[in-house]
Structure formats: structure tokens, C-alpha cells
Length: 189
Image (cartoon, rainbow, N blue to C red; front, side, top):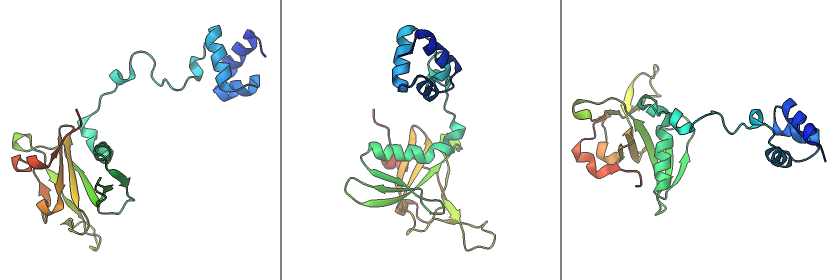
């Protein structure tokens, strides 16, 4: 066993709990438990609190302009909450998620996000893909019906739609107005 001073000295000189464990010859959990009981300061070792002070959540603020970065994750979370199996796919596929509905039916889902709104605040979703056969790859084409089964549109946390590809077949833009209300999805209450 070690003395209180040896424990305090090992903690002061360490940069990780593993360092403390090696120095004292005991599991890190034992050293931490003793440090707590003895009142030894080990804040510099506790990496689970990245922001000191008040609640971390109050220091974070999701930004609408970062929606594009979170689209696939939001859609995947929604599908999982709905009881579906979800797999993300490798790049260069015309769809973002492979979803298996509770019925066992698989579906290829393309996630689209939009921050832009037109009159009335309705977002505009671009539904086109690169023409990989074009030498410049600048040509944009509508998604082929063989490539995508559903579009998951996200215009914000309250503006999400799961639209069958057949509903927007051949379109390169979608403005989900009142006629898309039946495709609107919501987070659980």
C-alpha cells in the first residue's frame, strides 16, 4: 500500500490514470477511489469533463447552417427510432442509407438537406446526381428509379419528409408544400 503523500505525488506528476496505476502498482480505479476519499485534486486527469463550469449543453448551440453535416445521422436516428435497421454505405453510391423496414423490406434512401427557403419558407431540395459518364462530370441528372427507393428530406428538425422516389420521379428539385404533408415525419414526443 502507499501513503497519502505518495498517492498525491503520483497524481501530481501523472498525465493519465494509467501513469498513476503504474507508479503505484494498482489498478487506476483503486487509485482514483482512494484519491476521492483523501480529497486529492486530480482534475487534470479527468478527461471526461472537457468543458469546466456549468452544464456543457448550455454552451453548445446547434446551427442550421451545419445541417448538411448532420443529415445522414439525423435520418439514421429517425429510422432507428422507428424500429428499422440502418446501414451507412460507402461513398460513390447514389444513396446514403440502406434501411430495412420492420416488415423486412430493404430500401435505398438518399438523404437531402436544405437551408434555403422560397416564399412561405418552403425549403428547396436539389435531387440530382453527377453524370459519371460525362467527361467533365459537371452534368447533373435526376436520380434513376433503380438507384433510390426513397428520399429523406431535412429542412430542419420540424421539417422532414420521407418521400417515395416514384412521387418525384424525373425531378431535379423538390419544394415539399401542402401536398407532401402525408410524407412528413416527426420525432417521437
